[in-house]
Length: 544
Image 1 (cartoon, rainbow, N blue to C red):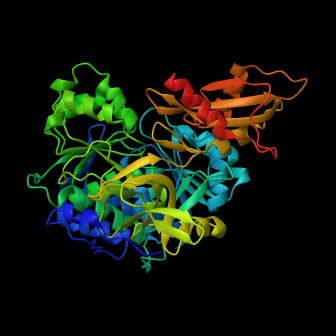
Image 2: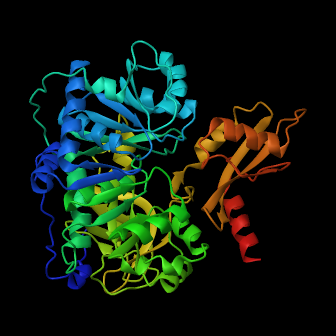
Image 3: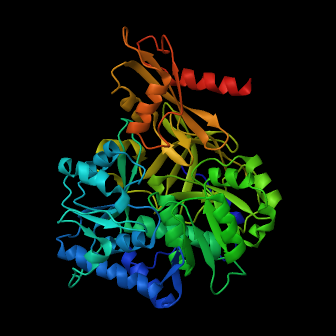
């Protein structure tokens, strides 16, 4: 494959280097450096309580010492199942300090999903919100878990079993911390679980270098050409840390820039408006559904959104009309971007220094090669400018591979290029546009949902003979899940019963919101169920 030139470099600000600089040998060393630079400055504000950079390192080290005392060693896995909180950060960097691997677990997962991630990763330790402790304790016998550490963020505490501890108690059990050598390109720091073609989540292996490269790429794009960055600035950090977008592109960027991150465990548009008015933050990142919700709020014009340096959006396609409405009402700049878990996640986005093109996801970040390719009998060739093809990526942020899945890794990364499966095009200035995405994937409220996983759960309902799940347009979530099913002869099930079964066995954003029972589902000549037929039918309904 002969690579094309990089036309996007001509719109780079002169202060932005073509290649990103990675200055640290591990993520923990990065934290140490930030602490030296910012020491007593506030790093995190959470429900009125403030932690400085010094305190962040102190609690991180205490956690690492306690974890080492509990038997945790380099390469071991610890699962994190928390909402956004400072304890999440202390836990992650404590794991990184010991050369361990943090396993991201969505707190909305049901027991079946949690059990799969724990068993697939081989995690022996977990830090979990105490309200979710009973759920984890119930499945512990089916996993390799030997230590559960609970975090209380307010309210009544759970009664823990003797071998388990609350976070604060656990911190008191440590001693010394061993020196651990990190191989920056080889050592995995994070397992980010994402959907798989088989319906089971697979762990994206992100190394220390992957994450260090990506948040530096994002920060350089966002702040290196900034002329009005204040000495002390505040960020709203509401994107979930359990997704790498919220962790890398927000939390880790905030640490690099010395920001006081106002951490929110959940999104509430009224709360965001109050914080903007009261705290006058400098930066805020969200997903499209957040801006849909804000667009519907009265009084948004008076909150001071126009004082933001910039506001970024990712996780799902941002409709141009939604961006225009938000900008018209607030006077703020809302900039779209593109990424995926396999790229830590940011590949392309609109930095504040480039001229705006509505509908574009922007330009590639530093040290990143992006191509639009067409598959031919002789291999892949570059698509002409303006023509759609598959978007492929090469750069230091591209994952090491999928955890224990060499075949799926080989299918995704070919000759160093990550094949995203997303269909895009590039204009003559090097701006990119997403035309379509992985055909089967549903993006609901910014979360990736794979139909095969939903179908596998529905097949557990005895009355269902065949099932297909598709994404249908939703004015708030962007897309929502609809399931089509065929019942077994002689069996009865209502649409409401099927929806309830989905709610009981899937995270809320995955559970079908609509169910339609059909006498037959579309099939190919060889009997393969055709999801695309139903998806196309839904598109026709929208047009009509």
